[in-house]
Structures are given as C-alpha cells and as structure tokens.
Length: 230
Image (cartoon, rainbow, N blue to C red; front, side, top):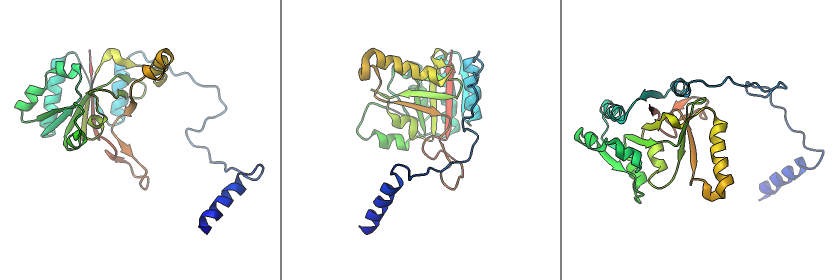
C-alpha cells in the first residue's frame, strides 16, 4: 500500500503546473519537419499499385478476369498447402464462386461461417480462410474488411493462410478515400450508417515487439493472397 501511495504522490508532484518537464525524444525518420506537406503523385493504375505494395509486404497478389480463375487459384493453393479444412464467409459472392464442391472433391472440407457458437474453434483448426473485402487501398496494399452477418473476423485472422477476393472496382487510391467512405455513412445515418466493425489488414501479420525481432504470422495469417477480379 505504501508503494502505491508513493507512486501516486510522484504522479501528482510531476503533473503540477510548472514542475513537469517532458523529455524530448530524438528525431526519427517519421518525425514531421517544418516543411510544407508534399503531395503524392496521383496513382494512375490502382490495381497495379495495390499488387506492388502487397508484394513488397510479403503478400501474394494476382489479377484475374473471372470467377473461374479465382476458383482454380483457390484449388491450386489448397493442394499446394495440403489443406484439409477451408473456412469461408457466408456471402453471396463466395456462393457464386462455386468452389465448395471442387474443394470437397479434392479432399478439402469446407466450413461456411453461419454464426455457430463454436465457430472460432473451427476457424482455429482451418488451414485456409477465404473472404471478400469491402475495399482495397492501392497506396498501402491494405484490405478494408467489414464485420457483419456471415462475416466472422475469425475467418480472416485464425487460419495460417488467408485469401481475399476483391473486384477491381472496389480499389481506392488512398487511405483518406477509405476514411471518407465511412465518414459519409456516419454523416448520413449516424451510427446506423456504419458497419458493426471495420478492420484494415495490410499484408501478412507481423510483430517486432519481442527483442525487436520480426516474426511473421504472430497475430494473424502469415500467408496472405489477394485476387483482384476484373
């Protein structure tokens, strides 16, 4: 108890007006300078830029023209990873994909997210997660994922390999463009105009908080594939 009281007294002392002297961290690469903001050149080819940024992050991207090519990619990936279980979102776009039957014929069980009570356990055992994305951001190689009915977050986080299918018309150029989409939804309908949650996923999961050693796949998929269709 004495230690706690001593700690709180130090906090009170240091935060009294005129007594607290903040430290001055050294400049780092991202420290803003007193320079006018630089405008990035306009992204002329958003799909190409998205794929470039994703691959720079260690992800895998491909542009395809139709659902048949998406289906073949997913089948080939499942075979290559020797997958036994694939879990996917319960959305019309993936029903239309028609990959469930061919996957099961190839020996891959398909589980469809329908809000089952134990579905996180199922997703945790899956080899591959498959979803769509609401938006893709070209300048950073980022996926914008919305939560909601049939769109469990576990599908995009727990399997070691993750695949997203995104129509090219869903590619935005910059992060502010994505933020503006949700700001407009809020302005139009308040909280009711927003999805249950929004997650921005940028490439494979990575963490460097343990002795500054980079580890890929620590808090999410380490093997990320994005198929841009159209």
